[in-house]
Amino acid sequence: MAIKISLRVVLLLVAFVALGSAEIRSTKLRSDARPIIPFDDFGFTHAGTVEISVSELAFSDQALPHASLSQLGFFLSTRDAWVHVIQQLQNGDISCALQSHLIKPVFLLTSLPSPSDNSFSSSFNLSEPGQFTLLFANCLPNLRVSMSVKSSMFNFDPKSGRRAYLSVGLASLPRIYFLFFLVYTGLAVLWVFFLRRNRSTTLRIHHFMLALLVLKAINLLCEAEDKSYIERTGSAHGWDVLFYIFSFLKGITLFTLLVLIGTGWSFVKPYLQGKEKKVLMVVIPLQILANAAQVELDETGKFSPGWVTWRQVFLLVDVICCCAVLFPIVWSIKNLREAARTDGKAAVNLMKLMLFRQYYVVVICYIYFTRVIVYALSTITSYRYAWTSVVVAEFANLAFYVYTGYKFRPEAHNPYFVVDDEEEEAAAEALKLDDEFEL
Image (tube, rainbow, N blue to C red; front, side, top):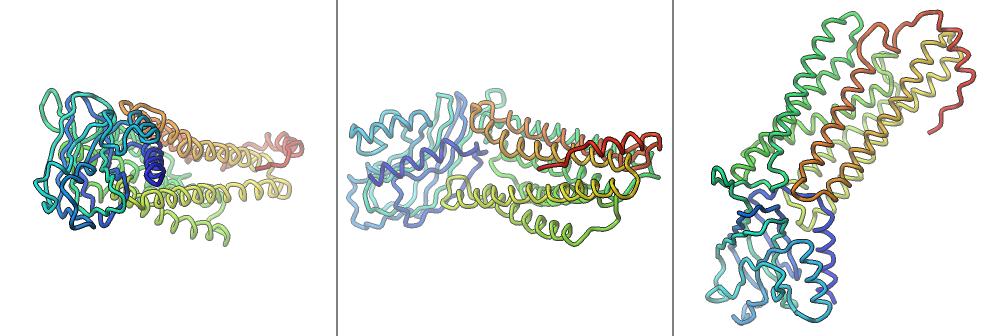
């Protein structure tokens, strides 16, 4: 029963987590008694290969008979095949996953000359395309296994004959990220030109927007190089460090910018109130924690024992940050409504009020789309088209950046600035009829 429950847990984990890049990965197991130990998954073409190198192999039972090693070994399985393996185990047709004809054995420990051998290497070629997961089966109750495993999965490029370490559905990511890098670089240049042309109405927050565009562009370049090196060599060669650094800076800058826009800083007032400063003091440390969780998720692999915990931490922190940036927008909406009734500038305040309301809705839609819709798309999309969720997410980011820049651009006729007095009377009437804004 314990084996069946563990297998179900693994099934759920394999079925619902996002696709990985399957670079060369090293994993250490120490006194692990799990009946099924997953390592990584990969989308193979017709010419795929799995290589494993195991060292420091040891068992809790020093007198383990050689015949018992048939119950231990590495194998590959698709998600659909794994469902049928579960059924075979439940029906009693087999007593160990390695006995199923639905899996693809990579290396059974019976191939070892004796249980005392503590290292070996093996490779397995696939001619069948599909998304496979590399697993280790331990069908001996109460046996604990220790070992260091270096695994690599790759496809052979039919044209060049070289190894491609990115899953078949992710092989185009380097080009996609580089294309978006060029787009954001163009936007940054365009924004600089726009700021120079409108120097008289350019505020500090507009330079902050420029900094965000530059960081986003550099972040995409680092990610393109990161994926490019992984695709060619199986290792990021240090580009992952640069990616994490600029991802951290970009994340903090984005959320800080959303808070500052929401408070009206630099547009409406040159200072932040106490509660607005507290929001920033909450968001920035949470972004540090979120980036630490992201690094842990990427570096340890999604099948490591602590992956689920770090994933929950990341999601929780991300949700808190997304909710926190909405509060300043709501406060500004309420402040503008009160000001519109007291300072006699109904037209200006009405336009600001409408702008904040629109931005509030757009921010909610952006958060929902990038955190929910994109994730749902990544779980239902075939492994061959895993790149589509990345493209959709980046287009959503691009649309949000462009919308924000357009709505809060430095122009004399921007809703934050002076409007014609003729609109004052009509705006005053509109404010009287306007219902109270509700969340």
